[in-house]
Every structure is written in C-alpha cells, then in structure tokens.
Image 1: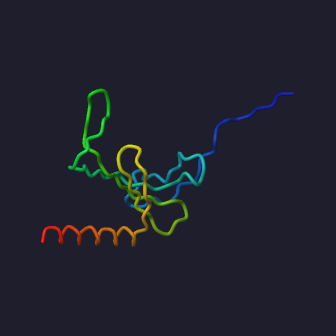
Image 2: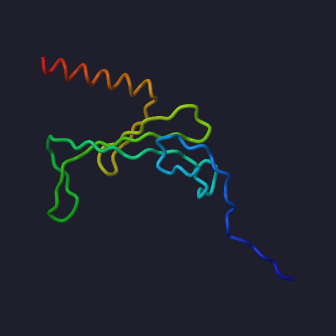
Image 3: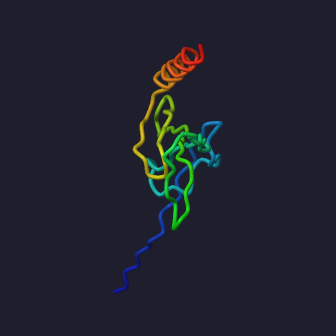
Length: 114
C-alpha cells in the first residue's frame, strides 16, 4: 500500500487589496486566510536629536520612527502601525486616534514656535 502526502498548500482566492497595499495581487501566496493582510509602504522619519544608535562595529546612525497602514482580513478600517528603531516597541492606532495624535503634535509644535 502506498500513501501519498502532499506538502503543497492550495492557493487561496484573492482578496480585494486596499489601494495603498504593496502586494496589490490579492495575497494569493499567503498560506492562511489570516495572512492575507494589506500593508502600505513604510514611512521612516529620522530623528535629529541624540542619542545615535549603534548599527554595527563602529557604525552609528540616527534613530528613527517608522509607520505604515495595516488592514487585517475582514477589518472595516485599517490601523496605523508605528514603531521606533529597528525592533522598537510598536503602537497600533485607529484612524481617529492617529488623527487626534496628529492634531496634538501640530498644536504642540505651533505652541513651541509661538
């Protein structure tokens, strides 16, 4: 008796990607439906204040904050994911929260600049 097993995972049907999704093909290469996540390009904001961070032997650079849009399968709205540095702690913001944070940051900048 011969038993044949296949390690090939069947292709998933395409999902409708968000207009900003870097995949843009419906994530048919994902192995599981929960992996069919839309993600935007990452935006990096370099921080100008010290301290510098070590990135290799005698190699230093400025720290940075990164952010990108993320939409999980079945979600009605994306979130904005932010993290600091390469492996920094991340924060996930709903769109309304990101907008409130943006307003608060702009108000602080305007106040500081007088």
